[in-house]
Length: 233
Image 1 (spheres, rainbow, N blue to C red):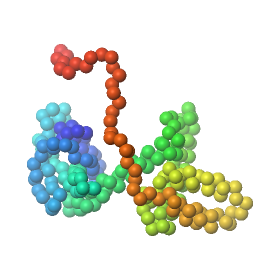
Image 2: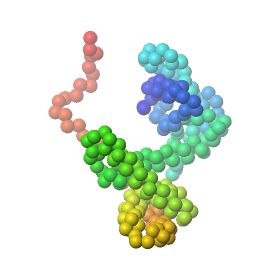
Image 3: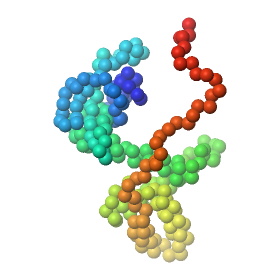
Image 4: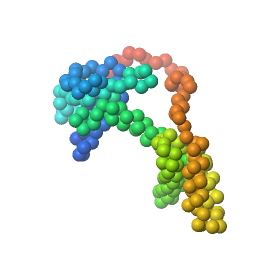
């Protein structure tokens, strides 16, 4: 989503399809908007124009639409997010924190695909019933690891998001194999408590970022690219 022209139809429709539905996304560069109302420092209501193309495609769209813009600073850099969350219910600081916490949700999906499945591209089963069973087992394993990681975070008075899932997964998986083979089930609670204490070594103070700038792969096409083409008739 790169501009208000393409966003209006999607976001307004999203708001209308259900009760108390909202959206939150980063603001695009060079946004063309007027400040309709100011709620405080770095918090304002923007008035954006809906393009003629969008209104032609969806006649139900209004001429203008509104979005709340929250501007805040992270590591000396100014960032702005747009949202439909009302200012009388959600403070600007809460909106900024919510935007960054949603990143942890995306990391969770990555953990499912990369760490838990060892970067497998596809599921192994070929029947629907077996696929459902495979996905169910994967989610159970993920929830088990997350539960123990959360218990460890509570024990050490830290946030669960501060635990490295990759290392916690390997550590807990090994311990669970040992627990499964224990001859004395009565010792399991004590072993779990020891496991949560030992997970202190997998806490991370700062989530690593890529050391190289983002880039796209070079196009391999052997044909010249036409920069200006006449529309088809």
